[in-house]
Image (cartoon, rainbow, N blue to C red; front, side):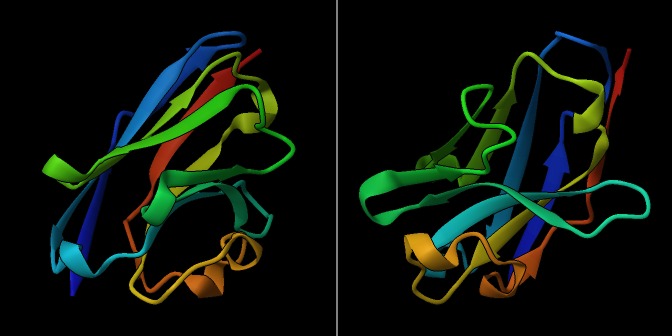
Length: 127
């Protein structure tokens, strides 16, 4: 089992920045990749970013590429999402996820790739 707890969300103005953190506990040594997804009201949960520990490859959705950065610190079992140049359309509940099965670029975008999820944290960008 892997437990995930997100922090760092909140309210920010357009153009501002936030950094989300996701602290993992439990069988963290078994994780192959970590990801961030988001879900706006009335919409499906969408992929935001992922990091595959082997090689530390990073992948982003087109909507956040160039504005968001995913990073991780294995020593403290934490993954981060630095969000810059925020827009109102970034408003959503953000979820951290962990995969304990092998992940490749082509599978990192799918929510079904991930086995464990955090409870989610609200990010609101005001216009």
